Image (cartoon, rainbow, N blue to C red):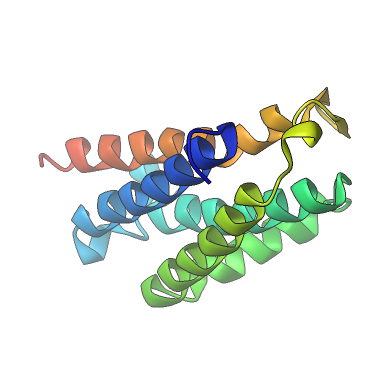
Amino acid sequence: MANTVQSLLAGSVKTASDEVLAALLRLPEDKRNWSPGGIARTALDMVAECAINNRYTADLIQTRKWAIDDMEAYNREKAEIAASGLESVTNLLKENTIYLVDVIERVKNEDLDEVVVIPYGTGPLSDIMTYPYWNMKYHEGQLNYIDSILGN
Protein backbone atom coordinates (compact mmCIF):
# COMPACT_ATOMS: atom_id res chain seq x y z
CA MET A 1 0.00 0.00 0.00
CA ALA A 2 1.73 3.19 -1.15
CA ASN A 3 0.84 6.84 -0.69
CA THR A 4 -2.37 6.33 1.24
CA VAL A 5 -3.61 7.56 4.59
CA GLN A 6 -3.44 3.95 5.72
CA SER A 7 0.22 3.51 4.75
CA LEU A 8 1.17 6.84 6.35
CA LEU A 9 -0.57 5.95 9.62
CA ALA A 10 0.71 2.37 9.66
CA GLY A 11 4.29 3.57 9.22
CA SER A 12 3.84 6.33 11.79
CA VAL A 13 2.41 3.88 14.33
CA LYS A 14 5.35 1.51 13.83
CA THR A 15 7.85 4.34 14.22
CA ALA A 16 6.09 5.71 17.31
CA SER A 17 6.14 2.25 18.90
CA ASP A 18 9.86 1.91 18.21
CA GLU A 19 10.50 5.37 19.63
CA VAL A 20 8.47 4.87 22.81
CA LEU A 21 10.39 1.64 23.43
CA ALA A 22 13.71 3.42 22.83
CA ALA A 23 12.70 6.11 25.33
CA LEU A 24 11.77 3.45 27.89
CA LEU A 25 15.06 1.62 27.41
CA ARG A 26 17.07 4.84 27.83
CA LEU A 27 15.81 5.03 31.41
CA PRO A 28 17.97 3.33 34.01
CA GLU A 29 16.57 -0.07 34.97
CA ASP A 30 15.82 1.03 38.52
CA LYS A 31 13.79 4.02 37.26
CA ARG A 32 11.46 2.24 34.82
CA ASN A 33 9.01 1.49 37.61
CA TRP A 34 9.75 4.70 39.53
CA SER A 35 7.05 7.28 40.17
CA PRO A 36 8.34 10.85 39.99
CA GLY A 37 7.22 12.64 43.13
CA GLY A 38 5.67 9.40 44.32
CA ILE A 39 2.41 10.27 42.54
CA ALA A 40 3.17 10.34 38.80
CA ARG A 41 2.73 7.36 36.53
CA THR A 42 5.67 5.05 36.01
CA ALA A 43 7.35 4.52 32.66
CA LEU A 44 6.23 0.87 32.58
CA ASP A 45 2.64 1.92 33.27
CA MET A 46 2.68 4.35 30.34
CA VAL A 47 4.13 1.79 27.95
CA ALA A 48 1.65 -0.84 29.19
CA GLU A 49 -1.10 1.65 28.31
CA CYS A 50 0.35 2.07 24.81
CA ALA A 51 0.43 -1.70 24.40
CA ILE A 52 -3.18 -2.35 25.38
CA ASN A 53 -4.51 0.75 23.64
CA ASN A 54 -2.96 -0.46 20.38
CA ARG A 55 -4.95 -3.67 20.72
CA TYR A 56 -8.18 -1.94 21.76
CA THR A 57 -7.86 0.56 18.92
CA ALA A 58 -7.21 -2.20 16.37
CA ASP A 59 -10.34 -3.96 17.61
CA LEU A 60 -12.30 -0.70 17.42
CA ILE A 61 -11.15 -0.10 13.85
CA GLN A 62 -12.28 -3.58 12.88
CA THR A 63 -15.62 -3.68 14.72
CA ARG A 64 -16.45 0.04 14.84
CA LYS A 65 -17.60 -0.65 18.43
CA TRP A 66 -16.12 0.62 21.70
CA ALA A 67 -15.07 -2.42 23.75
CA ILE A 68 -14.11 -0.85 27.09
CA ASP A 69 -17.17 -0.93 29.33
CA ASP A 70 -15.34 -1.24 32.63
CA MET A 71 -12.55 1.26 33.25
CA GLU A 72 -11.67 -0.45 36.54
CA ALA A 73 -11.02 -3.70 34.65
CA TYR A 74 -9.02 -1.77 32.04
CA ASN A 75 -6.89 -0.18 34.77
CA ARG A 76 -6.37 -3.57 36.45
CA GLU A 77 -5.27 -5.06 33.12
CA LYS A 78 -2.85 -2.19 32.57
CA ALA A 79 -1.44 -2.51 36.11
CA GLU A 80 -0.98 -6.28 35.70
CA ILE A 81 0.86 -5.79 32.43
CA ALA A 82 3.10 -3.09 33.92
CA ALA A 83 3.81 -5.33 36.93
CA SER A 84 4.77 -8.21 34.63
CA GLY A 85 8.08 -6.52 33.89
CA LEU A 86 10.05 -4.97 31.08
CA GLU A 87 10.20 -7.98 28.77
CA SER A 88 6.47 -8.66 28.95
CA VAL A 89 5.57 -5.00 28.43
CA THR A 90 7.89 -4.56 25.46
CA ASN A 91 6.82 -7.84 23.85
CA LEU A 92 3.15 -6.93 24.21
CA LEU A 93 3.71 -3.49 22.71
CA LYS A 94 5.54 -5.03 19.74
CA GLU A 95 2.89 -7.72 19.25
CA ASN A 96 -0.05 -5.33 19.48
CA THR A 97 1.65 -2.80 17.22
CA ILE A 98 2.12 -5.44 14.52
CA TYR A 99 -1.58 -6.32 14.88
CA LEU A 100 -2.60 -2.63 14.72
CA VAL A 101 -0.42 -1.90 11.69
CA ASP A 102 -2.00 -4.84 9.86
CA VAL A 103 -5.51 -3.65 10.73
CA ILE A 104 -4.77 -0.07 9.63
CA GLU A 105 -3.29 -1.23 6.33
CA ARG A 106 -6.45 -3.23 5.56
CA VAL A 107 -8.89 -0.32 6.04
CA LYS A 108 -10.59 0.47 2.75
CA ASN A 109 -10.52 4.04 1.45
CA GLU A 110 -14.31 4.17 1.36
CA ASP A 111 -14.41 3.39 5.10
CA LEU A 112 -12.19 6.30 6.19
CA ASP A 113 -15.14 8.68 6.59
CA GLU A 114 -17.38 6.18 8.40
CA VAL A 115 -18.60 7.74 11.64
CA VAL A 116 -17.60 5.87 14.79
CA VAL A 117 -19.23 6.54 18.14
CA ILE A 118 -17.07 6.33 21.26
CA PRO A 119 -17.73 7.60 24.78
CA TYR A 120 -15.71 10.75 24.06
CA GLY A 121 -17.72 11.75 21.00
CA THR A 122 -18.13 10.78 17.39
CA GLY A 123 -15.83 11.14 14.45
CA PRO A 124 -14.60 9.53 11.28
CA LEU A 125 -12.71 6.24 11.37
CA SER A 126 -9.67 8.08 10.01
CA ASP A 127 -9.53 10.08 13.26
CA ILE A 128 -9.73 6.89 15.36
CA MET A 129 -6.82 5.52 13.33
CA THR A 130 -4.59 8.46 14.40
CA TYR A 131 -5.10 7.89 18.13
CA PRO A 132 -2.38 5.23 18.71
CA TYR A 133 0.25 7.42 17.05
CA TRP A 134 -0.76 10.43 19.13
CA ASN A 135 -0.90 8.41 22.36
CA MET A 136 2.53 6.84 21.88
CA LYS A 137 4.16 10.17 20.94
CA TYR A 138 2.56 11.79 23.99
CA HIS A 139 3.95 9.09 26.26
CA GLU A 140 7.34 9.21 24.54
CA GLY A 141 7.47 12.85 25.61
CA GLN A 142 6.61 11.89 29.18
CA LEU A 143 9.30 9.20 29.19
CA ASN A 144 11.83 11.70 27.88
CA TYR A 145 10.77 14.12 30.61
CA ILE A 146 11.40 11.45 33.25
CA ASP A 147 14.81 10.94 31.66
CA SER A 148 15.49 14.70 31.90
CA ILE A 149 14.45 14.73 35.57
CA LEU A 150 17.13 12.10 36.09
CA GLY A 151 19.69 14.41 34.49
CA ASN A 152 20.14 12.50 31.25
